[in-house]
Length: 357
Image 1 (tube, helix red, strand yellow):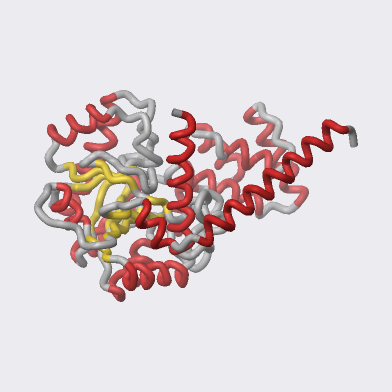
Image 2: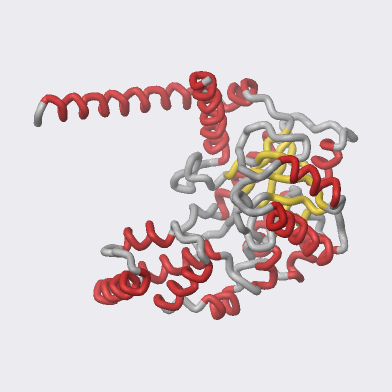
């Protein structure tokens, strides 16, 4: 080993040691201390999927939340926080009521069927409010979100035997003009795809029958399930027509996704206003456009983003993604641990911001 390589390895070792020591010190600080340092009137949490076993259409996208762990989350929240409904939050935003101490707003994105079969019974048992944001075009399993198709393709590839895997990778490489020499290379490639047409061709090449999967597995909520949840007191919100990222879209396209999806939910339930959560995030979406949409369409309720503990506008609330690999890399961290990591990360972001200013 030459001196330059030795110096590089030594610096890396020191960085790792410093990082580990810093994390140990940060972890030794109790969560309530962080909560006092970062005061928020309400902390908003959101999930996607709760189930005892990972499901094929989501297992390769992010860690799912096991049912026992999710119930532990609910018990922790009941014992240490005050869960508020969307109606309470909306009245607070209008200046009509105050928030209770340690208020938490709970929600789910994407409208997976497990929201009805798994999450809903637990919420009813513990008598806790929740808001479910559904993707308009996916209701009744009419279509499948392209990222869920990606997960199905990865699941299909991993199930192949060695000879079948080699043949599939060769066929994909030839069909799409890419070099896919391994399953890992395929995963990296397909996760970067966003074109529905290309992903449909990948599904066809691998023999993934999306229509059959929708018909037999029914991964998304149905209209009837949504009506039942609404009747039971849960709030149903919109999450876009197609779950498209809004950043980079035209003003007309953004309006179609927000207004159109809220209209679908309003018409389905006969209720308004309808809250809206941004697919992925609201980053890059013109705030003047959002304000105008809210003025022009009073049936649109509060808006929800995904920026963790950051403060948002009066009409736009940030939420913390509990399943995020940033705070929960293996999907097994307790909610207390997730919150601890989130507060640590938020404070560290603030320090970095001041250094760069």
